[in-house]
Image 1 (cartoon, rainbow, N blue to C red):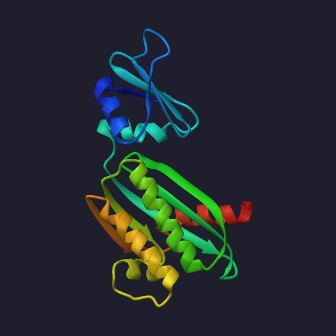
Image 2 (spheres, rainbow, N blue to C red):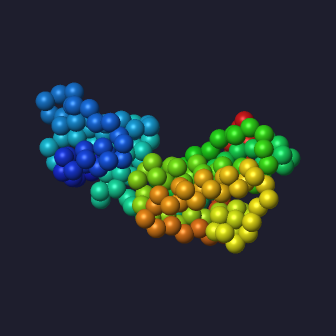
Image 3 (spheres, one colour):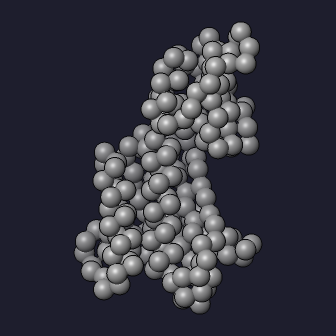
Length: 198
């Protein structure tokens, strides 16, 4: 159960700015309460205690005023191309892996799955309040298309590229690079587990 030493008023404002609804406390000793995902934060005079199944849903925002920089890893998988497909992503800050996700996304091509994984990873990074992101994936095609080095004739992929660029423009600073699969291991594993368990 993480305990964050902080000014509860500043912490409340940080959460509100991130779109988290803050409620009054349940007792005289509680300044306020907030819930997000699998986490519940309870504020006292000089600290906030975070509990629940996924405390990082709130601690990432609250520690040191919220983590502002992170690495974002993404991967999409398709068996059959087109075939059953899934996405996986992970967000890493100085605290380690602070958030990750994966799910099946129906039947599609590998490239569309890669784009969908990137979109979901960037949405998660924004939701967690990151301002600067270094995005990494093992799809050279997606990285080069998004960076404008390669074109695409596929209208669906062009649409996804525009969506990704719009999401990236929401960050104060971003970079996007191709990495070998072994560097992208966690996102790759999450995408494949989603397919195996679906």
